[in-house]
Amino acid sequence: MNLYEKLIAGEEKLSLVGLGYVGMPIAVAFSRKIKVIGFDLNERKIAMYQQGIDPTREVGDEGIRNCSVEFTADESRLREAKFHIVAVPTPVNPDHTPDLSPVEGASRILGRNLTKGSIVVFESTVYPGVTEEICVPILEKESGLKCGVDFKIGYSPERINPGDKVHRLETITKIVSGMDEETLDIVAKVYELVVEAGVHRAESIKVAEAAKVIENSQRDINIAFMNELSIIFNKMGIDTKAVLEAAGTKWNFLRFSPGLVGGHCIGVDPYYLTYKAEELGYHSQIILSGRRINDDMGKYVAECLVKNLIKANIPVQGARVGILGFTFKENCPDTRNSKIIDIVRELREYGIEPLITDPTADKAEAEREYGITFSDRKDLVMLDAVILAVAHTEYEELTEEMIRAMYHPAHQIKVFSDIKGMKDRKEYESKGYLYWRL
Image (cartoon, rainbow, N blue to C red):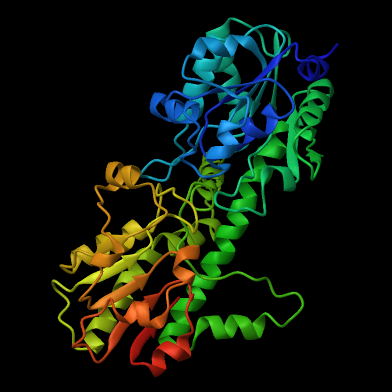
């Protein structure tokens, strides 16, 4: 029996290293078919899972309570598994170079607990070559085992989209790769247990790594183009959304929208590719110029708000500004790498300390990461300006009357920045708003 057959028969277990937005849904999905150990260093997080609480909201509390994953913070439990999936974050450093410390740390932990006959599959986003050139030597050093002889490796880039209830692990085609044909076949069959959309067998680990990095780089560049158009059209007094709706009637026009690019993928992955390119002597032009535009959009949003306060004859310093939404994307509690903080920091440069509210955000995380304490929405009153920053479903229900109640009643002109264009521009302009959107 090969490893796949042993997993199916319940003779071997699968382990998931890293139980965040990516790892936890994978662990839960596999637990419906085979025995799963879910490992994370964060004991607080493990305690929540053991109590049936899902802090990520990706599968929900009931999904956690009803799954058979053995949640643990004890690394020695990894020795019970033979098929290992590593799904830890791969962020960038402040200087935009890749921060491989989480994936290196996970490799050390797994290496210490690796047994003969195992397969290790990395899901973390990396530049081509990391799995074989950085992770494998760590696994070998820590385990004393030889890759290709005592254990095998593969790579299957994560495509989890936090907060998205349509594009799930089960419904997105999964890229899989392995160091040899036998490994590839086992990795593909294991993932086929949970991925209804099927798998794509990449011809090598490096091809799979590269595919992941360019998926998000492509999206980043397209959004950067939309953001640049938004800056140009704002100068021209043209509504970008109206332009995109008109252009979108052409059959081959690609539908992208301007916006703040945060999170752990689109705003991060391009730097992994450009870093490797620099190592090889090539300085990226398109990818990095797109990154520069997107990284500056929070500052741009704040500057436009300040200009509109001046237009409305409202003193800038000490202005009461309410920000609705702080997470990096809609309907997701994750605040890490949120670009809303860039708006906050820029407003502070002008002597404005905004009031921030978010019904979805992880409040403890926002306090820990940024020192931000959220206000209750009921405290957003007597405001000089409102920024509708994140397109949470809850904010779709906000009527014009509810938004108007947030403003100081003396204001004839209400400064309103609807970053994502959630509200009807003409309705708000007809009711005395100085309405702005990307």
